[in-house]
Image (cartoon, rainbow, N blue to C red; front, top):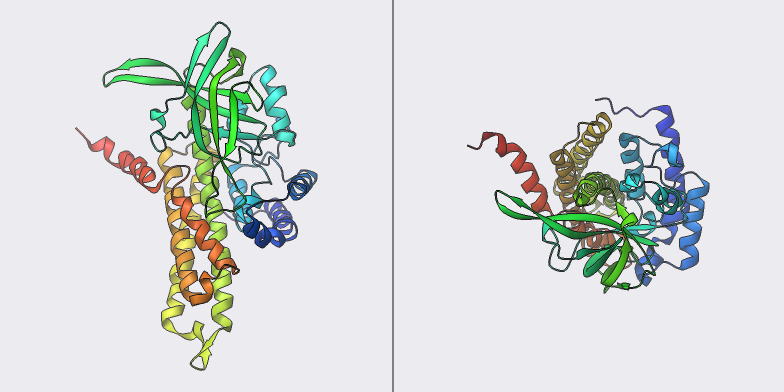
Length: 386
């Protein structure tokens, strides 16, 4: 594995870094205070991202995407991760599971999402089924050429901005040695479809301006042609999305941790106590050694998983290790950043307090730390169990 940055990669990273500095960072504080992004700012950021070729970089070139490999995408995600999540998410990397679109679905969903004309959201989590994806209770019952969908999804990220949702519903059951197992199908459902309602959930303390929503389906009728992938095989496409998303999240966390490290170092190098800068005290300087080491370790695990993804050999535990290490590392680095800054670190108008607040949710969404440990431990232990 050689992670030396090539000339082409450096050009891409320079472009992303300039975009983040010019288009995203200046608006962070205002978005955090308001908990909203003005519609005109959303449109401008998205338009400029498209104009500069930074939109849908994760999609193949043959459908109009940037065609970047996984390693390059993670380098890009680290740069984007330095910015407020609500803002960097406008530089969209749509769900790659849309590559499962077939026939008319490509023109209606895939291609316009890649060009930025339409926005997708991913809807699997329910009030009674978070980490337990097989616990979902939303059902889709066949009725002629349609399916009638009833149920509720919640914590659906940026569904308020989306034009359509990728919705997972139970469509049957299969007998297994351990008893009946739910069969799940994924559907493409447009906003405005009768029986489909989207409402904002109360604002979270993390990632202000990036909203979570409740999707409610009441006798929502969807044509069989809106099945994404194959009937009863929704988790085939879901698992592809989850692995990729966990790498994205890991890379974002590394980028944010590196920004925290820089911000804390600038503070420690200028803040004076007892006649010298606090960076000269061993109790402070050793924190930076640990923070830098943690960042590097998470970075390497993320890049290793991305490299394996490019080789077609990435496993669920590879993505789980990267996600677990990076999200828990970010929590520790953010906490130490606050400690280094002291009382100033928890003041509402200081960036460090925002990083600290935002870091907490990373260990929860897209698979909790406990779920990642389960995936990793099963991979280690399963071959030795009798």
